[in-house]
Length: 156
Length: 255
Image (tube, rainbow over all chains, first blue to last red; front, top):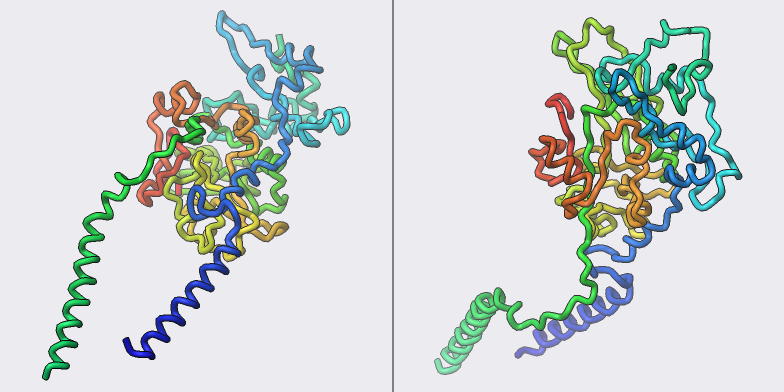
């Protein structure tokens, strides 16, 4: 073939070759293993330390409170779940990560009317889903926990 | 005369060879897999396919899931960074729909419309839908976001260039730019928890069990039972994202 064509083809092949070498050098390992992404990134996403420990961890030390909370209300031969299915950490937000003893920073909470109201305040969107209370009406001067034990909220 | 004929003949021969070769290749290519040796897969475990169910009939809009997610995943506290959030829909008797999400619903909601004007009202928790055909994965120019073999849409923080194409592409508004890490952040179904057999933080704290998490391939999981019992829908099904978050009692007003 003509000299020019040969030279063009040769330089094309050389540049493509150099490009492929550089690309191979720069692509991280594990890229392309499962698709067009770095497969090791899946394991990178696991490197977060969990904060929430689960109920059983709380129950291992605070067994008495856990047993109290697990009681259901019996009324008229019906069983009402109330707070018995509620997890400890729903209200007691953990302050430190799951691998540390909770005595380091105990998850204490401010029991205010607003705190109980976050779930129990009257809203039309909550009808038939949860027992609601009108906070502006019901014992306005008192804190909820003065009458209702949050771990056994019904009054016999 | 001779030289012209020889070149023309050579041209026709070369082009016929190229076309014939391409035709032959295109016929043979579909049968390429027959020639490949099937290697024994040492890892015989079948990956789970994670999904989530949301029961709007149970959600009370307390916002505990929103704050749990922020605590668990160290999401910035400012009110525009959410991996999951709750929206309150109030449909008035005159037909007007009011949608509110004060601080993502983190401190709960207040009823802004008087009782007598409300026709119906409900709260909808939202999060990344981990779509099987995720538009965000398609939009990423570098391959920093992907659908993992377990079905989760994850972000590779070392690869993301921060262009935000994926944030624009997501029809559910689930992604955001993390101001500290300067890369894209989103719900990961708490991958660090589910790979240890725990539930995601939002599922763990929900007081009414309105969020159900599980493996779609495991017939005994809570999620599969939830899907069998209830007529569920996904958000924006017309976009064909094949989302894997299923809502029970999803109203047509939900965007």
